[in-house]
Image (cartoon, rainbow, N blue to C red; front, top):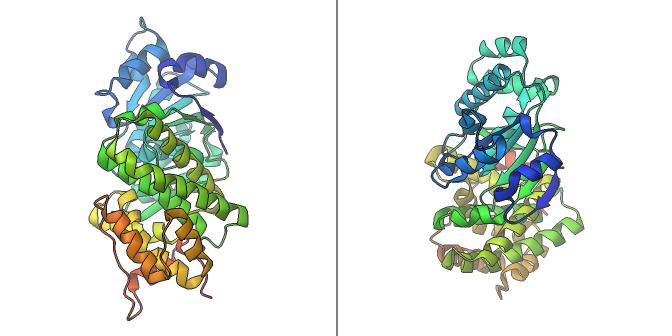
Length: 370
């Protein structure tokens, strides 16, 4: 697990933090979200990383592609960054990634730095084979010191060992040493997030807590933590969506999202995420929104499989629902208040979407039938 540092406003004073906590500022390169330049972050980073008088400072700051992280996009960015490190003769790079989940996931892959012979071999592979090789052989590569700074509150990527990439299907890059070295949390970076991004990331964090709650890998203390974290998100997210410039609500959401990420780093995710992947892949629905659309249906199924789930969900939402049907309706209405449409499972016959999701690794983490 990475060392976690919660420091509001640290984005404005990264230079001294990096000098103290990383192997060397002179070897630090940055990977940022696409809108970083328009938000003034790129220039700020250039001044802090190489100083006002440095030559061509933008060479040290790379911009990630927007949207879902495809294997093709990840490969192109990795090769550009690796080429820059080779040209600069950097042997022990420090990679600072600032952005949402896709940017941080990309950095978890890019930090594995091949030598010249390994790069030549990688050039022969098509994209899917390239990722397979990286997954199986990354421990043989140089490992850059990695610092992750989330600009949204929801993905939890800064504290997990997983990177999600998209090809013909959803793919994962992970490994025993795939965690970042440090997670640097500055909730002020999320202040620019618009309504839909704030909502979808917040609901992604809620999905993490819920998928830990109804997870067969969860211990009793994990379920207690899941209820507490989910309760915070449920109480914070709606007022935050009405008051996007509230620093106190942004900070509370940031803290809860971090804790939800730390929880799934232990338990992994479960059925909500397994159901969401096809929605994202086939309909280009954002990950957090795709998860949210399945929350109500999976809540009902969880209550059917383990009656204690009904009591837990009533605690989280302070609901008086007395059975699984009512909790599904209650959660559906709660989500609809944020303009989220809920998807339903076929209750009359086996639902192929559910059967497929339960066969996936994440779906297999879901509660067993009683």
